[in-house]
Length: 230
Image: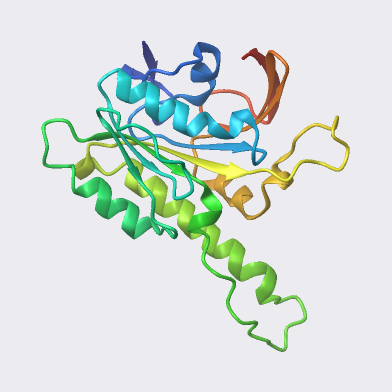
């Protein structure tokens, strides 16, 4: 499958799109080289496994996939799929692993990080100032989360690594009203991803359909909501 929208939002040469096990969701994710994609889902839900499903599907179609998932249970090895189970992650360690495949004939085409909170630095000790509006406990973690997002986007567009598609999963804290719609605020610190992702989706599966809150989309209207078949 191909799309003809370039990174500047105009029409350009066709860009390869990675395969997705769900065509409708794939059309919303824009799984193209150089793209940075965020997916929010509630912990323990079926949709929280979307990252693994994307990596497995890409690997089955001949795309080398690199999955960072320290808590993922051991399973039989899958060709083209490498699972890293480090308990803590940083943009540097992710980049190092991607770089280790860059010289191969089939470098990494898809990077999946599960979950973003594993890459958020530990909250530093408060640094009090005379400015009552300067609350380090609020501003510093957000700044660090935003910096992580910027670095992951830089990884995605790095030509030295063949511009791998980067997907990061993030945990959603569901609204108090279980029937209430999802919003960016339910991502907590991961809401900082809205600045650097090309696409940011929040997923909530209901029976055989899934509600999708499109918080960010460089290629279409956002924020908006839609429902797809699951």
